[in-house]
Length: 426
Image (tube, rainbow, N blue to C red; front, top):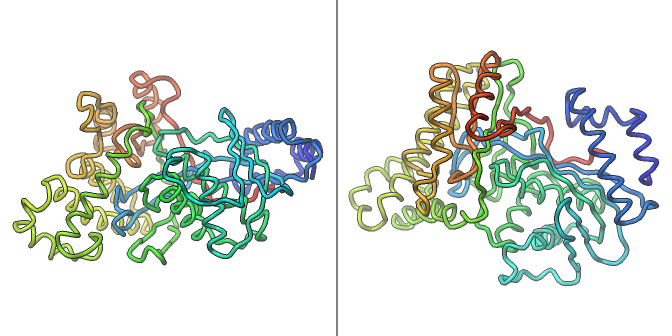
């Protein structure tokens, strides 16, 4: 369908059911229809108004439990959220991918040259290149296309805007050239490959998997090649709580070394015991070996290892609580997770700038407001960015007002859990 016809179909309500399947509420559908029409018009202006177009979507994600466990083959509990990246796309005939993201320069990739180049690390064009290369390596078809993308997943928020972008590209390649037959798990793995090999960031697989699969999902990465993925049956909307993400400011762009150190130190412990990652070692064996590990690895590495093992147990406990409808027990697990991240994993502020502790401040304020009523923890990679809070609905207005008085109006996001991952909406 060409741009003007698609815009009319959206405005006339003929595609409301497709929007409802992704965005759930009538209010959200109304907001998304306007956003989609604006994106389609922008595509037509850039690439022509006579193209046969489709629209894809990939969500951001929230990490619910399992902080910094995935990169050592651990367990996580995550959920896709209602904030997403969308792409208006059409095939092209010149073996070139062109992606224009709102507010950014055009990314142009010649599919005849998909060789990774270390001197281009950090360039967003390499993510496009890496997604095409990874999908081609799996034996799927890759072709040229033009795309206009826009995202309401805030960069540096811990909601994984980069993973949403990568999964979005994988979803485009799946539906445009492979009849939607590339699995959500494969798209997530390719997204991690793209970020590791082409972009130069040593990320784990959590962000991409949660975005690609969708809804509440627990993932066990004991086998990275075949992670065990399970959707968790829990109606969060009926819990009486809201999920808030508080953006405390700062961004993740200069924190790559901090993230890498968490993984590197955990793996240093494993290597000192003759293994590659902590998951290959039983907790009892690790704990018994601590006296012999002192001096072989730094003290923080040992603390981070203890966090890893207990965080894996907390993921199991959190999933069990949700499946049994025990939200009080779930909140207790989340609090334990947050305290462990703060004290043991130590990813609440960067040691490069120890006097700037906005995450610590947000957690302290949340504790004062929500003590014995809600739950709070650092969110995502940490060191800067966001915290997560489970807030009783009858306290939501007070919490939002108080926290935004400190961090700024509009900095407390009240989120929904999205029922699907990467999707072709239209």
